[in-house]
Image (cartoon, rainbow, N blue to C red; front, side, top):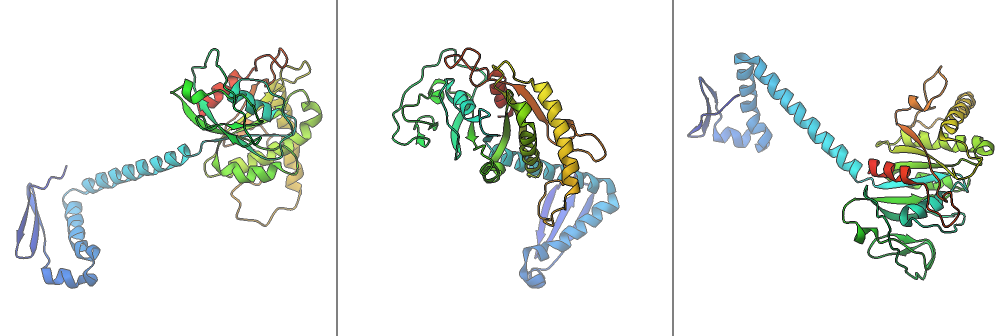
Amino acid sequence: MLRFAGLRRAQGHVAFVVPGSVISAMASADSRRMGNGGGVGGAFQPYLDSLRQELQQRDPTLLSVVVALLAVLLTLVFWKFIRSRRSSQRAVLLVGLCDSGKTLLFVRLLTGLYRDTQTSITDSSAAYKVNNNRISSPQPFWYQGPVPWKTVFPRTGTVSLYPGFPVLDLVSQNSNGTNLTLIDLPGHESLRLQFLERFKASARAIVFVVDSAAFQREVKDVAEFLYQVLLDSIGLKNTPSFLIACNKQDITMAKSAKLIQQQLEKEINTLRVTRSAAPSTLDSSSTAPAQLGKKGKEFEFSQLPLKVEFLECSAKGGRGDAGSADIQDLEKWLAKIA
């Protein structure tokens, strides 16, 4: 380690004293004021050059060590910057086709209760408190809001879907946890890409909701929308976590998550062939890849640069409207990515 034993000053001259050797870099006060227009960098550059040359002559490895330490420091600063940007992304987007159960899933995650919903024509957002220690028997409080869909509760920040909608005061009952922002996006064909474009940059995670019961007849539409969502996600600077939630598992004819994954891989592979044959766009500003997966190989989700996870859930629950939802795995996943 290089240690400066002292600093000697004599009539405008400076000398750095190093144990065993003296590195003297001299410059008059008048020349310092005139050199390089009086700039600080220009004044100290001769000293730095002289010190660097002396270090290289006496111990070349010392300079290499200093450079390596600076590289590590810059890496740590860059990593902290990236992590701070990542932590500022708190949105979890619920996307999918119409009638896939996104809005009821949104309601269940916030309240644990069932509520009749309607087709969304705009986005709905709410603060979601992540906590691994679930409340055993939460008590909802009621608030008669004057405006449906945009009634904000002051203590929780949650948004009421309808006037008189019960919302659990999770913030007051749980002091520990992390806040996420759940955003339910419309699934209508004319709206879904528009709202996805609006919110995708703020997404920490994307939950793609699939109607497991209607999947067989909707597989082409599901795959086409999923294809676009995956392309957009991969093109983002901070790639979000990605989950495909196979909803409505309470229905007898519902497909399993494994079967849905296999059929989606086959359908996306067909889409790749179709789209690769189409004329390519001239827009070079997009950072998204031209197609998903590896060329020359059958598509699999494991080929993507982001991890796509699958799970089964049921927003309605297996005991009818009054029953509890089967969304524990989804809640655990949200706690993991928070």
